[in-house]
Length: 455
Image 1 (cartoon, one colour):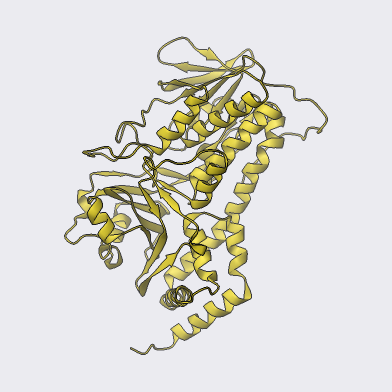
Image 2 (image 1 turned 120 degrees about the vertical axis):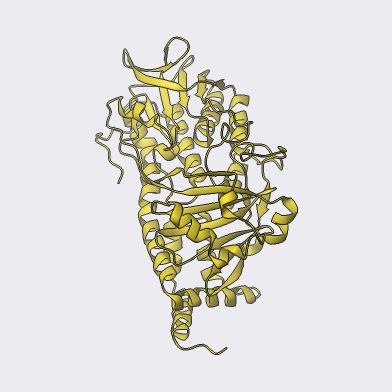
């Protein structure tokens, strides 16, 4: 759980540390969290007539195909986040969104069923975090991370294409070191480095009690089939698999432009589990015949935040996104958005002391962490369903029945949709699963599934 050792500050007491005209802010990491923080901070500073300088330290060039421009992510932006970004004036352009996902297809050994978007209003964006996978022959779409970074630069941020080699204190202010050029002293330093980097140690060594998040290894690979083949086999649906495989919590195949992305989440994903999944009949039926899983040109095994960091803030320091707290297994970009905006709002309107971040930023972190505790229950129940054949039959029958009813309640479909997409808090998902109508229908189908089925 998240921890802090700070005493509360009176609401009427002024902050001991404030940003002002001429303040210098360093953002370490130019992915979604770092770029969104910079965008919001500069936008808010302009509203209050404050002139500040933001330097974004990011050595990667997101306009370059993998691995130099890769941010190691499945590349799904939930429909709720698409709508929230639009409300903030950030509309994802067609050059970034490679495919709009309008449905899910749930695959199990007992059958498959398509889940349409609830109310036919929600859409999911499939994107590349960089400009494309290894071996890409033609760049047709822009980078999602590059687009967000360009928004921040358009607000006045400065890109520093260097890797940070050290962070320490200079007369009470954080100082950033790179391999070239003299150290630079800042009024505020923002960590947005994710969990797949040794830069986490730089913040640990600052001595304010920060400890990185607990993480688990995942698996992502990009398969080049061509746009026509992708459309024929996968269409505009994200294909989700609930299979009885040890340690596998969730797996999906995501159609994009010329590629599909295979994403596996669970406990310490290793080569044996990857091969078991890719060779499963349910998976092979979704992909072109004769495809060899060993020939995937671009794959990685990034770490994923599964438990929040300890003490992600101090005087003049705040950590956001994955290196602070993220949603369990889902919607990491959404968590980056929420933590980035909360930190920027606190820095501009309250202050940059530890007490300020505790009052303005900390509740957002706690909210995500507390919801993740409910998420663990949701995924435990999902895992139990994966382990028993009659419960998988019950899920299939319940969803299939809902999808065949025009205008009827789609409680199981909605619960699964929001669990797969991360579009709703886990608490909401859990409470909806306790609805008497939901439970009665599911338990009835489970009871029917236990008895021998007619052909």
